[in-house]
Image (cartoon, rainbow, N blue to C red; front, side, top):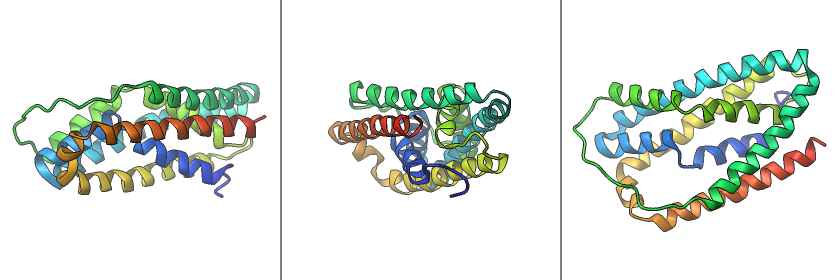
Length: 206
């Protein structure tokens, strides 16, 4: 679909990655828990804009490599499968504890948006992820429209998931932060899923 190979795996992998607690997720939950839905949505906008910057940079580089260096593109596909597995292993090894809560004065949605944008831009692993992730679901002869469709999928699914975080986070963030066992289970399940994705996609790219 949309000239994206392994389409169902592509969508599932995006959802799994959205569920992994990261700096962007914490920024959104923090904004929602402290200052409500408007603040949380401000953080969502900031996070999505930061991700978009890295996606555009990654896609621009991939488009050039796909057409000029097919062998390098094939290597990126293998790297992507290995990178997914590596992230999964790191999640399985990660120690999950109770986060520290620090009181903070009330802020506007714009302030939270700028903070979330800065958090995204200071996390270069995001661009590395997109460089590794997109080639896994591209054919060597894919068009620029396919890359655009992939970016749109990531943005829309991220928006839906993060909006849900805002709506739930305002009421539940403090309670969930006190349940390290639940956070640990979610992290471990995400790790297993990513290792499985890496193995499956490596086999598909043989």
